[in-house]
Length: 113
Ligand SMILES: [Mg+2]
Image 1 (cartoon, helix red, strand yellow):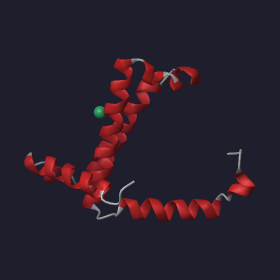
Image 2 (tube, protein in one colour):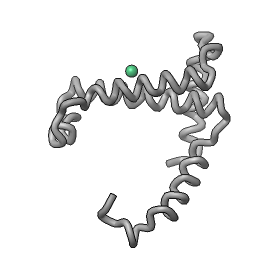
Image 3 (cartoon, protein in one colour):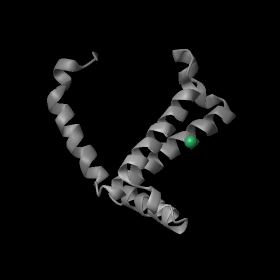
């Protein structure tokens, strides 16, 4: 991923909120609650599906659109939260991947959870 992609999206999301004067509602607690709600909406789309139905969920255009929409809502709030808390998401993910590499060495954990 281009290093500017997430920061560009973060700026677009910030501008979207600012144009609507919603920034005043976007404290960390509210954003985490909204993020959780959106994850719940995404979860609901997979609730009660069999594993195979979940794999095939995107084949249904209407369900696929709903899944994309909810994933976008989740990303929206992650990006807003990263702005409010001044978290560099690309750096945070890179650092977390390094921690996970050390915690779960591929040579030891490959194929197991
Ligand atoms: Mg939603």
